[in-house]
Image 1 (tube, rainbow, N blue to C red):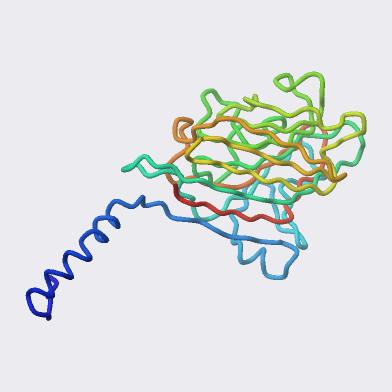
Image 2 (image 1 turned 120 degrees about the vertical axis):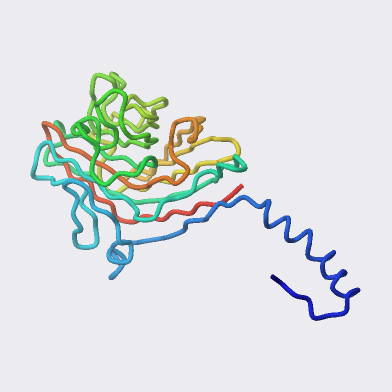
Length: 268
């Protein structure tokens, strides 16, 4: 029980002053911001990130290897240990977030490489999803329906049956299915493997408008943008979601390396 040690009139005035503040605090959305920034080339950042390594992923010298370049059918990923709160079940308010990362993809041959990598946000995962190798990028299971709710941004270096047939390298947005709901395929296919070398990407989600946007900068400096409407809650992404990256090789191999990663969420 709280006591007021001032005269009754003073206590009443204090009550009138602080009562609105008290109720505003009660009504405020209970979104918890998550913010971090890591450059894995900086000494100590790999340890500070304390990421969960999944499948064949390993920590390298200032990089994170998401797959084993020497192995076909290698699948791996990393997940941030702390969940991000995306919406408030009581108020229905949705959080927004921005994430930026740099990464590198390279293969032993100009052609015949596979398969790609992705940023994901979705259900908790302690391992790579079952049956998610090859063209499924370690992102979404080939089991129907997939056991994990997942929204991903894929950077795909191989053409599968469900991919655009008039381009090989492409990036897209996936919602509980490896077939992208929207895809960017005009990456400059006149030169081999536009999704190769060191690249950077930014992903922004506006919780109010439910718009997910992606900006990709290729190794040659070209920038390509993509956006679509995604309701994370309707897609089954939990209130407290896991964020991270996944990658896979298939019949052919390539490296998938994460070089830096920052993330910032905010309430609406």
